[in-house]
Amino acid sequence: MTKLTTKRLTLRAAQDSDLAQLFRIFSNDQAMRYWSNLPHKTPEDTKPSLEKLKAPGPRTYFVFDYQGQVIGLGGIHSGTEIGFILHPDHWRQGFATEALKVIMNHVWETTDWPHITADADPRNLASVGILNSLGFRVSGFAKDTFCVGGEWSDSVFLSCPRPTTH
Image (tube, rainbow, N blue to C red; front, side):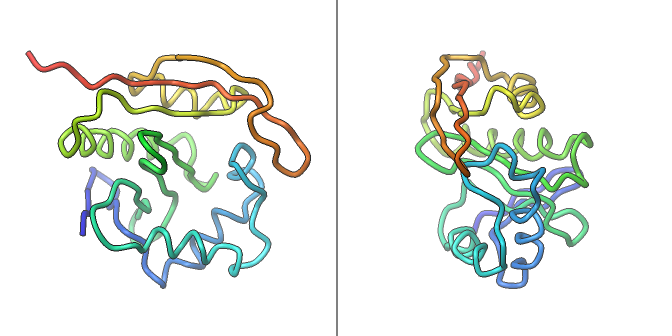
């Protein structure tokens, strides 16, 4: 089972004991503002996500464990697309950037992908800024790509090319 570490985080598969902490993230209105579904109402809503995060085998999507607490999650969730979410208590502290750098290095070391992609709501300036700081560049835009709770959002598509070695 793949486990990665950073200066402050352990990036790992989810465990059954993580349900309450994952629900704390997925039920938070701020954290879910630009997510592709509505905030979870009960821990039962979070169980399918937990089961996916527990799946055995090679891992490219991780929970972010900080001092024994799950504060977020992220990684490659579909094709070559990276995504991430953090509980607002941990925003603006560098955790997402720290985790994604290590995840991206893991992807470059274990795949032959020419790039990693991302799809973000352009109103989510913090996430777009994190992606830009990691080397992602805008590759396109689309209107009305997600409808969540009756509200349509647009997408900005980004791509980060595989680093060249000299």
